[in-house]
Image (tube, rainbow, N blue to C red; front, side, top):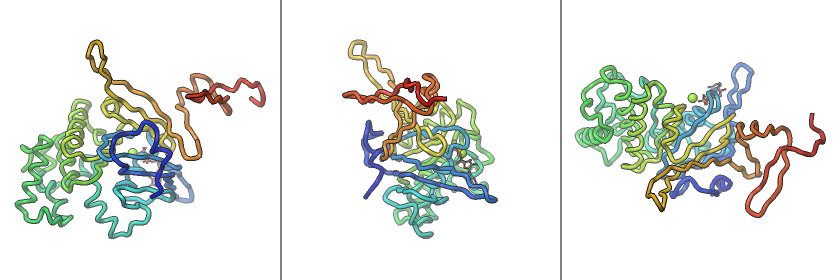
Amino acid sequence: MTTATATDSGPGPGPGPALITCDRLVRVFSTAGVEVQALQGLNLVVREGELMALVGASGSGKSTLMNILAGLDTPTAGAARVADRDLLTMTAADRLSYRRETVGFVWQQTSRNLLPYLTAAQNAALPLQLAGSRRHRGRRIRAQRALELLELLHVADCRDRHPHELSGGQQQRVAIAVALANNPAVLLADEPTGELDSGTAAQIFDAFRTANETLGTTIVIVTHDQAVAGEVRRTVAIRDGRTSTEVLRRSEVDAGTGRETVVAREYAMLDRAGRLQLPADYVRALDMRDRVALELETDHIAVRPDDSGEGRA
Ligand code: ADP
Ligand code: MG
């Protein structure tokens, strides 16, 4: 298998093998003769068992990426693999089983996640019925599994209520239960707390963490919420349809005081051709433009503003 080795190396986002691999992913939308390059050669590796956040300005391509990973949209070019499925060459039948068995998703609009005429418990049992899983054959077994998930997400008391009888936060918890019902390899959430106040958003985030820690589900969350992004070990920023920088956080225990602190470090993506995108604020801080001076040192590369005085406007 030839996957993105460039992004595979380095500090490494986690211990598990790669579960999601996007290699130079491109998605071009053409509407009324106008082309929009929503993804412009995006590289991303997500490892099994990770809980990570994707951040980026509006229009940077986050939802386009999520729709591709969810099997709802197909890339224009590049490679995308999730749990050993090739998202570019899947047949329509593969795509359907992929959506029903391999991925679960939670969307921002609480109304998009649940069927209004079913109760919370019926919503959570529905994916099991649709997938026709052998393990969950029989209505009683499915109802039991649905209830266990509602319990895990602290909404078991809502089991007999319809979505309109639930708060926004309860609806999203039930939505997470629905998304987890078939024990998917990956749970994708596109701004799942976008319609919630910050207190409720923090609780929903805890629900994702519970799912990740208890069930081991790999989770990718798109979020605008800095507080949420600060809670995960790894945050990848998308800029203009490409992954630009990522922040890794790890806890360090002070040997003297025994106090635990979280250390965050910023990384940039390096593609196979050696291309690197510097964070915009770094570039601005040193007024770098057009050309920079490079020096290879024994253990690092120095990047300085162009001091040649030649050819600069
Ligand atoms: P984000 O989720 O980061 O806000 P999107 O992935 O929704 O960004 O959009 C990325 C770019 O692609 C935007 O310029 C958007 O207008 C465009 N785009 C997204 N979906 C479509 C579509 N179905 N048709 C045309 N353009 C689209
Ligand atoms: Mg979006």
